[in-house]
Length: 224
Image (tube, rainbow, N blue to C red; front, side, top):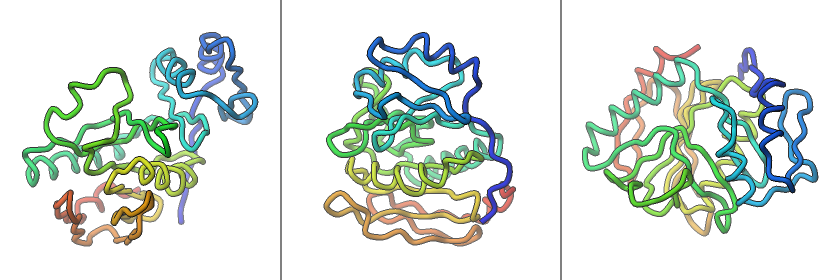
């Protein structure tokens, strides 16, 4: 596994701006380039208020009870998401792959994730208010790993559990460190039973309810 250069997720200036806007009962800390909540606990309502007040370019997530700063995507990351959007539109024209979709996830919806993309029927989210939609009706979520030091825990562990507990049928992970496509599916009792991994270049069949075939040869163009 090649991790390359990991970028800091937040600057000291961004932290100071965010800390100054935090709810009165939330104390933030900034240690070794990471954002923490003092006491390691934050209520969902306080998190959502904090996320609304985040500085421009800073996106926050609440994953498995941990406050996270979602890394900004680089150009190859954006290209992969765009490629998936085109494939989804061609094969499932009644659906859309919504980029950077906020979702309430985890057991009892006690988490908030900003998925790189979420596949759902056309106009599925327009009736929902706020930045964090309920996961009902979402067919698939997509994450593309980023060049940050927390991607292993966040994308390969915490979000697998969070998306499954939210009842989302499929979690597609484009793993740029391994040049693989991982299809978490076969959801039963709040956990994915199958997680096959395919190398870039393979033809990947995404089963129901997604029903999309991905020829991942194109991903080789986006490999680092």
